[in-house]
Every structure is written in structure tokens, then in C-alpha cells.
Image: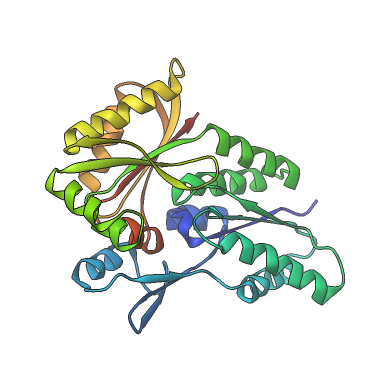
Length: 289
């Protein structure tokens, strides 16, 4: 049986070395600062993005990849890998229309070819490495010769078992992006309120809790993970940040005091997700080892 080909959009924030190691096909999303347009991870790195973000007067705008562009990606992969099924995993449909674009692309290609194609499109119901971890595991299984059904089942299992929380350094970007009101942002900034955010079962961002000051927020996040996993001590963790590596490492160190950490991933939160969270964001994703 031909090996399954794994596709994901760039918001998965999978480290470049891992993408290359497992041959994952990343479809870049586009981001614009005014008239300047960039393909995430190709024309602009995370570090360059955050530097530009802090200097820009306007909020950058991201745009999802179109169905026709996904159709071209799938067409090329099917031609290059005859007989190989495709599993395409994407950012939550509750945050972006990317999943719908990929689904429509499959339909367009089937109408074009007149046959049913072996393309499975999965809504991760998450963002950043929250679904990046699913993409990497899918690629590992594909390398071992797993079937589409086996890969899909494991991706869905990971989606149910992962837990995640993230902190933003400033409420400014959530306010600019329409996630919270201006008054709430101003009040939160004045009171040094740090919201603790997560993603619900529908793949939508929500506020779990809030704390006054970074130290209390960090302690609360650790407490939440301890409550989530109880006596389960063997875990994997991924900590993603936007120019806040010190806080990212602090989370790894604190989690290691409560759990035995097996796989520890450190990666950047990319430009598209970072445009909504701002610099200084840290996201922590934990799943059973």
C-alpha cells in the first residue's frame, strides 16, 4: 500500500526541522501589512513578523488559502505520489474558513476528474501546535505505513486527550481583533489582568480564568494542568511563544516538577496566529505520553 501523504496549513506551527524530517506538506497562509503581502514561513519568519508587528500602526490581516489553491496542491501531490492517499489537517473551523476551503478543493478536483479521490480533510478544532501535534503524529504513523483509518483515529484521539492554555502579554491585539471590547482591554491593562485562554470542543477561543499579574497567571495555569491530568504523570508538552522564550522555559520547568515529561517541543507561534495574540504570547499544549 502506498504511504499516506500528510498536508497541513502553516498555522500548525510545526518546527521546520520536523516538517523536513517527516516530509509534511505545509500550505502557507498569507498575511498583509497594508500593501505588503507575505506567505507565512516563506516570505517572513516569526521573529521578523513580531518585530514588524510592534512597529506597525495597523493590525496585519491574514487571508485563508483559497479552494483553487488547495486543489492545485492536491493535484500536484496526487500526480507526484500515484496511489497515495492524502490526509489534510487544518486549523479549527471555528477560527478560520481554511477547513472549508480544503473540503471544497476536494469536491472541485472530483468534479474535474470525474472520480472519487482518496483525500481525507480533518478539522482539528484547534490552532498552532494544538493541532501541530496531531499533524506530526499523523506523519509518524504514515512513515510506519499506517492506513488512513488508523491515522484519522489517532488524530481524533489526540484531539480529545490534549489540554491547552495560553496567556497574552497585552490585551491590545485581542481588542484590535475584536475578541474583547476596548473598555475591557483598557481596564485589564490598568489592573494588570492576565486572561487565561483555551479552545473549547467547538474549536472556539474562550476565557478559562483570569489572574492579576503574570506570576499568579502562571501558577494558575500549572494548577489547571494538575487538575486536568490528576494522577496521570507521564506527559508530552509543547510550549509555543511569540518572542517570550523565558516564560516558555519557565512553564517547562514548572511542569517538570509535577509530571514526567517525555517529548518536549519548543516552537514559535507563527505570524497568522500571532497577529491575533500579539508579541509575548505563550501557549502550552499537553497530552498523554
